[in-house]
Length: 104
Image (cartoon, rainbow, N blue to C red; front, side):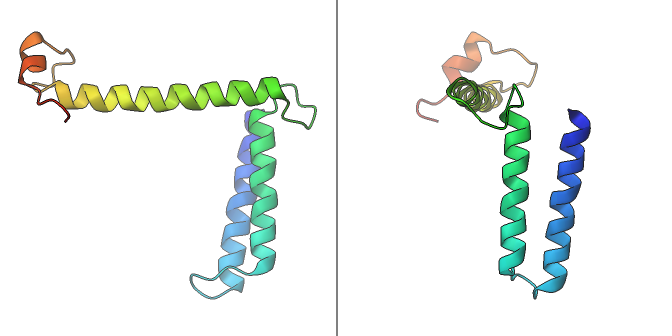
């Protein structure tokens, strides 16, 4: 599974490099855009199609949504922790909570 992901990543990188050589700087050819879209879809399917049937079914979509929501929540908690942990000791003390400005 990991090997397939690495192979698809290499294909994606190759498509990007080949396209930038064919088109001018900052320009993407229509062929490059199509190849990139196909590579992205292949990566998406490989990553989220848990039972490898070639379809992202409702259960897999639900799992994907839950994972994305958890990632957003984790990022928010990390950012809040960074803002509140004034002395950077890895803990949030009452004094740090009291010192925190509301809405910040």
